[in-house]
Length: 95
Image (tube, rainbow, N blue to C red):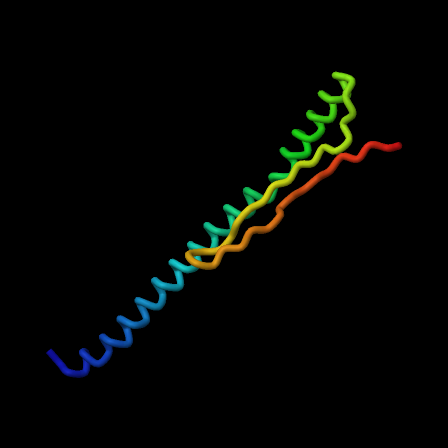
C-alpha cells in the first residue's frame, strides 16, 4: 500500500462523521418542530370545551360567568425546563 493513500483517509473519515452528525441534527430538528406544530392547535379543542361548558351552564339556569380554561406546556431538555402558557380563555358575561 502507498503512504499517499493513508493521508486521505483521515480527512475523508472526518468529513463522513461531520455529514452524518449534521444529518442527525437536521432529523432531530424536524422531529421537534413537527411535534410543536401538532400541539399548537390545542386552542381549538379548548375553545370547544369552554363553549360546551357555557352552554351547559346556561341551559341549566346557572350563570356561566367565571369560566376559565388554560393549557400550559413545558419545554427544554435535561436540567433546563421552562413552563409557558400556550392558550387561555375566560368567559365574562355581559352586565
